[in-house]
Amino acid sequence: MSESATTLVILGLAVLAFISGRIPTGIVALGVALALAATGILELPQAFAGFADPSVVLIAALFVVAEGLDASGLTAWTGRLLVRRGGGNPVVLTVFVMLVVALLSALITPNGAVAALLPVVVVIARRIEVPPALLLLPLAFGAHAGALLTLTGSPVNVIVSEFAADAAGHGFGFFEFTIVGAPLLVGSILIAALFGRRLIPARSPATMSRDLTEHPSVLLREYPAAASAEVDREAGVAEVLVAPRSGLIGERVFPGMVTDSGELVIVAVSRGGEQLPAGEVVLRAGDVLLLQGSWDALDRNVVDPDVLVVDAPDAVRRQAAPLGWRAGVAIAILAAMVVLLATGLLPPAVTGLLAAIAMVLTGVVPVTRAHRAISWSTILLVAGMIPMSTAITETGTAATIATALVDALGSAGPTVVLLALCVVALIFGQLISNTATVLILAPISVSVATTLGLSPLPFLMGVGVVCAAAFLTPVATPANFMVKDPAGLRFGDYWKLGLPLMALFLAVAVLLVPLVWPF
Image (tube, rainbow, N blue to C red; front, side, top):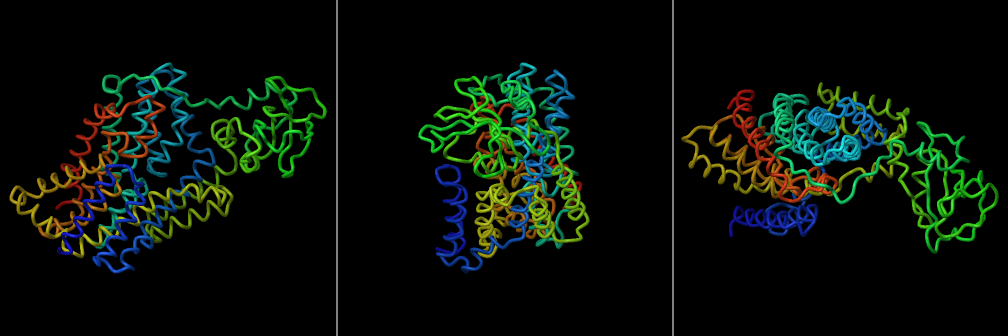
């Protein structure tokens, strides 16, 4: 079997594994890299070169920067501020929700933006008494459009820009994506706002996210002894339940007592829903302790097998606490990163790393949270599939596919060839990760451009645009899946709104992109 055929077999098996969903995407990608090395298609250093690729470094750094914006409360605060301007009008709220999530997606990726705004949007839907799906599906789809506003909006953008740099000598600029992203965002908002009620099923979710915006006030009312407790930008309160068989059972505590960590104070104790009188208490299973301390100390200490936290302090702080000093620092770091990326003074990977390091060193993001913030499945997926892109190119597979495509459609013109590439990308994007899709099709796009003697830029940008159009299924992207249960949506509920949006993205990719980046 030739190297090209072997590469295609490995690719086909990987696509089947992605579609089945039975194997984690990161494991599939690593399997691809190992298979390419085992079959001799690539040397071992080439098979693992993806882990040292600048695009992987930038993507990992952006996860930490996104966590800084979210941990500082900026994303939730922005959502509350702008969404509330919509009043009780679902159409106006749809517009605001999509605008907010798009702007956040441009800075912190769609998944981070949707995760940050999801609780806020659910609360808004509950308050204006509309099915959450009417706002949550536009939330997810607006994030896809927003991802095309800047270079950092999506790993797909970063990968496309890297391929453009290799093939054309220069990548796409930080705001160059805005040329296609802005009309896509406007068109997506118009479609969702005007036709959303007809295209989105009004389903009721099994569970609703908790509204924690008034949580500190509720606690202070339920615990009279906590009237003097501080709930502000830096400090807060949290309830913990003494777990069954907890080591705390039988311990003697009293209000005002400092916990063993030395970081928290016991404000009050309740039993059976009633606050116990001041004085020493022998703890029993089921007792509830109201603890006070800094938000960071609460986060660290409630993760204890002896207690069960009632509402995570981090979730309460993000929804209810005023913005603190972290917000200002996070904004400053973000602004510096955007300026460096837009001006190109430093390589993008270096800029991203500097921003991520600054988030950690300034205390905006603790080290442990920075580790958790990185989506390792995404990193493994990108790093593992980069060798496949290399193999597709070096074995001549990309050139073979490109030649066949050009022979079949080349006489109809480059626009038709671009349309064919985009349709393939659209189909793949509904079944497998859009990141994997672009890594498979980007080298083929470059080979098509080379075969036709044309610029690779319109082909790469066109494929990048349609890779963001993953609208038809909940498994197409994490953002789609995140809204499924809170909105009460079913697998077949996405395509009605997704089809017109997909047509919009395809039209922009095939008609507008070549006008901006000529063949």
